[in-house]
Length: 117
Image (cartoon, rainbow, N blue to C red):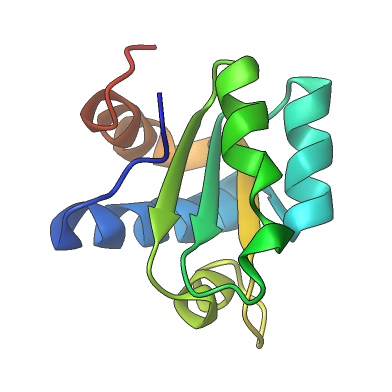
């Protein structure tokens, strides 16, 4: 299961899920935090930004996510990902740890990304 390319509609849903999970659940911001959440097995969904430079920063995440059987999706903008996560700068990656009220949206993203819960 490689990194999932998402339709424009699904990208919006991913940002929405991040925002809702931030408000009502728990997210981990940044590549180090997302990596730790994956390693601990607490990540439900991992989102990485496509425009990260250099790309090596997040290259290990899709492999680790696959190993841990966690869906990893890619969004086009680290700025938008950061904004959805509630920080005023770009976020290379984030992990949703507790979905809170984003449960339904998260389920839809995971199903569309090719993996059933």
